[in-house]
Length: 132
Image 1 (cartoon, rainbow, N blue to C red):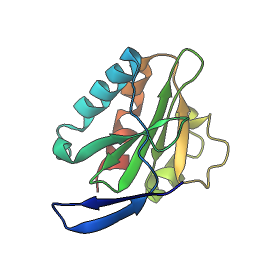
Image 2 (cartoon, helix red, strand yellow):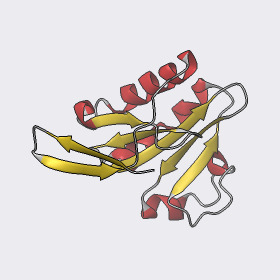
Image 3 (cartoon, rainbow, N blue to C red):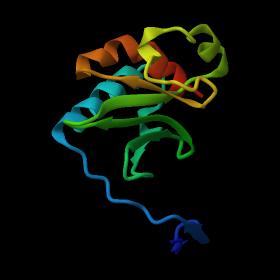
């Protein structure tokens, strides 16, 4: 399905996929707060957004375009995936933080979480993935 609309401020037609409803669990809200806290000193947080581009995960975007972090945090699945810059990918091929990512040629690298405290080890990678 394709959604067609009109942005009255910009006076332009919008064509794209329909926006899925963003509904976060309390744990996912905590994850969002943690990630935004990590990024607060490195980027303009007003440029951060959350989108539901898939039924399977929620996406952090920066500047409306950079899909830098995806996450799912439920009772059945706890993970994030990061769009790591190429130089960082090369240096982390064997990093156990990304053991969940089998295909290391993909743009997004998956990291399993056992709890939200696991995000601390991923902090430098989260920042590097977002910083333009």
